[in-house]
Image (cartoon, rainbow, N blue to C red):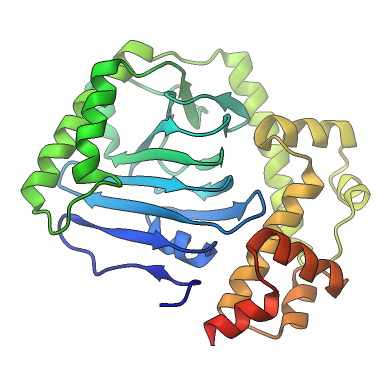
Length: 320
């Protein structure tokens, strides 16, 4: 199997495993198919990771681990409420512009935009379930709130239970598990979640929600500008002029949300899309580079190799 492809066994009633041996945006989209998530590698190096998917009548879980920092952003499924558990990472997690720590939880409303920066060596669990399960507990998200951040540390007993559950739902998963065992594990995981949500549940203030909505609207405008100007070399002054926004406001929004300047993140997003295009063989290296705003081919090749550990041409040959 090529180092640029994912290992995606045929799904069963219990689930399947996605093995990532290199940064592969298309594989990540297919692996997390309940929403459409764009992924961007945020640090140089050879990317590696694994996502264990488990499916039962109660919920779906994705238990993932990556070696390098990664950004995931996109629309979640309108049919499911999503809960994220941040188990481990070397550094802070950034969710919708807020810094979170290992042990924190985040709850996403159905169909809302997710934006999360994962630190190096991240391990996480994503749980998708029908919204009525949370409502049945008397837990409601305020109107206009897309994500609820619930800081805290998991108690030792909960951590021990998660270690045990990892043999069914996580990286220590045994092969050929039957659906009944996965269903039982999901029930145990939900008990952990209910206990933690009840202990941590807090609603953000109306002013905090308004500030977040204002920032999200600006970032959505930037995303639209980037989509409309894919082939144009990136100039932040042109972006500020087009959006009629001062650069300090743009920089602050990106630093609060992503922890990095807009020029760097937009460049890395373009680089990730260029890699995906090369893997799909949609054109020559020159065509792909210029089609994603990299008009200086030498700089494109240098940046590409720095991040992915291989030249653009090597990516094309590996897929051939």
